[in-house]
Each structure stands twice: as structure tokens, then as C-alpha cells.
Length: 530
Image (cartoon, rainbow, N blue to C red; front, top):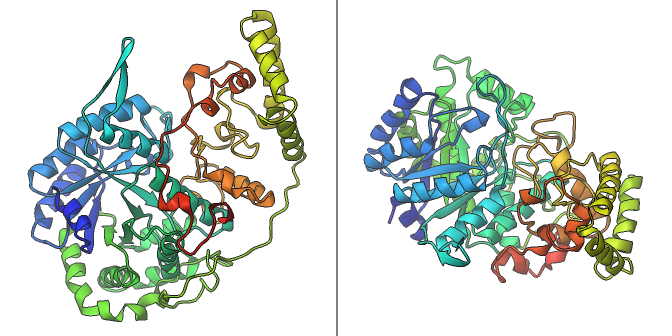
């Protein structure tokens, strides 16, 4: 068993370090990774290295190839598996290749939107998001059943230890609550552990651990990210240039001021990282994930040696980590205070239901309950009509033209024809989300809830949440939608829906009983999440 997995099973405090491979098959960006791996072997407190997968949407040397070299040095490894550059066939192929090469610790993420590429911006894939990818890999762990002619066979099971990402550092009500809801879906899909996205607010670190207790999920390991924040990185995060990462004006100013010292702020960066780890240990995290631009093994060694000296005073460092924007949202009442988590059951913050002014929403909702709801009077009529026109070419074309004309005007339809409008409260993920996120938001939304890619627009899931909350139907957002079936592209989504050809006729095989699906240990019902 791997060093990392053994430490997790033994409930040790785990330390991992993140490395970013460079572009090309050799050179400084590759040599630095191998040098770090060689040197970190002398720091026994570090249990594994993680290698990113085309980080930031930029091309880089494959983590799989470089990872095999790192493993050969006797260093344990976690490889990032991102969905941005591969369809589901590519994910399966890569997963089996990783298993064959002995790399079985994975961090499964949706991934950043592509930033550059050869002769222009590369095409984003996002065939699956992280939830469906985790479920896919869990099925491979059980032995994937695949068709062989008219029969089927079960492939040899894999042995992946599946990690996922979560960001407690979301500052609007919708972003925060939807991030936690998607975390529960990842657990239900099969995630074994989590690594947080980076952030610098101790109240949000505490909030995540309180949330895990609140929802009865304390058996799920959480590793907190610790970033060695330089002045340059602070400026970028403050401007919103790095997806999902935010540093407040005052926090950035503090880091920039530190950089004016003789060592350019290095001592302050290392001390802050050590204090972050002390806080994570004090709050009950499973471990710490150390990252930073041009991370050095000597820096990690200094941090690790400093932590035992200060960890008993972790409560004194809470107020130093205060990178929150103006008017921040916290999930629990009193979340804005810098106090250690108490043994008392936290109380979820209550807010007013938002208003929805969209006439399209209300009209479509009425139509849905009149025609599309299985128990409605119009449903059997539409089902019979769909059967009638399915094999009658002329009527099918007329019906399809009517649908496309209507949905293009109302929803900017992209004709995927495996339509998820119902599940997203009549907002189209294909046309209004650059990643086509059907199951929940990615981690890249900005501090104000705007999209990672289109900064002038709100994340679609901000709007989905508001509509669900307005109707007191947030429990419907728990549904894990199967991935889009591309065989239905440019057909008729109404026929596909009524005849059960689309995702509504499929079922993702998930555990019937999980902590996430059964509600909180404190007695909260699943339907009362928001």
C-alpha cells in the first residue's frame, strides 16, 4: 500500500506538496520537479507529491509520464485527472494506463478553462464533470461491465483512491451553498478524500469542518491547501486572474509590504504557511497540501520543522488569516467571528428568499407542470404524439423546427437534445456555461459570483440556486444528472424526453445510503439544505 494511503488509513496528519510540470519533454520546468522529488525524500513528514494536469488551462508535460519517474524514486504520488481535455473514452483509457503503471492515487477535478494552445485557444472538452468522472472511476474500481457483441463482460477492477476538490472560499450565498452541495454529490459518487482549493480565511476553513459535522460526514478526510503567497501571486489573485482564488485588498497589501524586506518576504511566507498548517491541525483537518510557485524542498523542510513549535498556539493565528471581501457570506450564524470551532451544534444562517423576475421562468414552469410532468394531464398526450411522429419524417421535421425555434429564442438553445432545462430550473447549461456544467458549479467562480470565463456574467448556478430557493425546491438540486448522450445531438429533445431516450430514462447507479444523502447528524432533513 502507498505511503499516502497508509497514512490516511492510520489517521496520521498527512502532508502533500503540489508540483506543476513545465511545457516540453525536458528543461527547467521538468528538471525542477524531479529535483524536488529527489530532495523531498529527506523530509519524512511529507507523504506524497501531487502533479497537476495542464494547470491553469496551459499545455504541459503529462503528469502520467513524469509521475512514473517520480514513483521510481520511491516517492509516493497523487496525479491530477482533469476533465477539460478528454472525453469519457479518453478518461477511461488514461485511467487504465495509470493503473497499469502503478499510479492509483488520483485527484479528480473538472479543471480550468483552456487558457492557450497551438495556433489559438484549444477547444475545451468537459465531456464529464468531476462528479460523473468520479462515479465512472468508482465503477472501474468495481469492475466495469462492457458489451462484447451480444453479451457483456466485466473488466478487471482497478484500485484507485479517489480524491476530489472543494472550495469553502466562496463569498455569495449561492456559490457557498452550491459548492457544499456539489461536495456531497462527489461523496455520493465515490470520492474517498478531499483537498481544498487555496484560500486565506480561517473562518472559511472552520466553516468547512463545521459543515462536515453538520451534515454527518466527519468520516471523510479533508486536506487543507496551504499556499506560499508571494507579492506577485497576491496581486493576481486580488485581480481575479486565477480561477477560484481570491485575496482581499488588505491581505494583498500586507503581503506586498512584506515583500519590501531584504529577503523579499520569504520569511513571512514560510511563517504564514506554518501557521496555516497549525490552524488546520487545530481545526481537525486530516492534513495540509503545500503549494506555491517554484516550491523548494528546503522551504517545505523549514515549514515542517516550524509547525511543532507553534501548533499549540493555533488559536492565536486565526485572526491573521482574514482574506474576506466586503459583505462576505458565511454558512453558519456567527461565522464572521474569529473563534475556534465549539462542540455546540452550529446553526445554519437563514436568509430571505430571493425574488425571480423572469417571465420566461414562470411561463416555462407552468408549461412544465401542464405537459412535461409525468402526472400532468398533458403528459400522456405528448407521449402518444411523440410515438406517432417518431418514424414519420415530415411530422418529425416540423415538430423539431417548432422546438428549435422556440428554444433558441427563449434559452439560446444549442440543440444538444439531451436537455437539462428542467433540472436547472429552465436555464441552459450548454449555452450559458462555458464548461457545460450540469451537476453543479465548478470551483472557478469569482468573488462576486461571476463566471470564471465570462466575467461580465453571473455563474449559471448562482441563478439556478436563486430560482430553486425561491420555490423552496433546493432538494431537487441533489439529483446527479447522467452525462450528455451525444447520439441525441441535433435530434428532438421533446421526443427524446417523452420516449425516455435522454438522461431522464437512465439512472446513475449510486449507493442508496450515504451520510450526504441521509441528511445531517443533527437532524436536518435533506430537503431543508437551503
